[in-house]
Amino acid sequence: MFREINLEARCCLKKLIIPLVLFVLMLSGLVMVCRADSEGDAQSAIASAQQQVLACYNSAADAAKAGANVTGLLSTLNDAGNLLSKADLAFENGDYNSSKALALQSQQELQGFEAQAGSLRQTAGYARELDLLVNVFDSSFGTLIVVLCALVVWFMLKKRLRQKG
Image 1: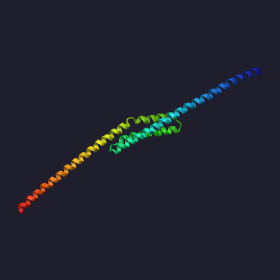
Image 2 (image 1 turned 90 degrees about the vertical axis):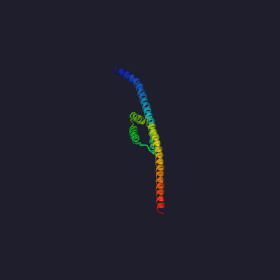
Image 3 (image 1 turned 45 degrees about the horizontal axis):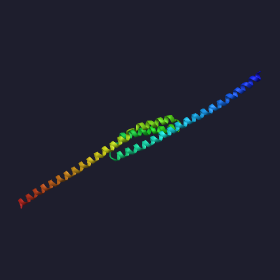
């Protein structure tokens, strides 16, 4: 009797083991696919954030070359760079969800950055042109005043010399 029960239990156990093994294999494959998707998403988000940081850095450099005060821009760029560094670190540690979230935060930090840098660059360009015009006008006006004063003094001295002589 125990043999019959034992044989039946073995038969049922064999029937359960095969589906159980197949289920575990399928589940592990699904987890790997999900992990690969999140890893790819994180890697893509980091690459996109790196490109945006580089573009914003170039915009800030152009604004600085134009003479704009880029202190605020550099602060924003620094914050976004710190978030991107944290995203890289999280990616290396295998925390793909945090890595993706930090990369997206970095991109959000830089929204409107290039427009702001362009505006500062344009304003600095206008200010530089205005300064040039003012300097040219002031120099020309100053030169004219010096020449006129010299002529007046020359005529006065010439008149005195005629009166003495």
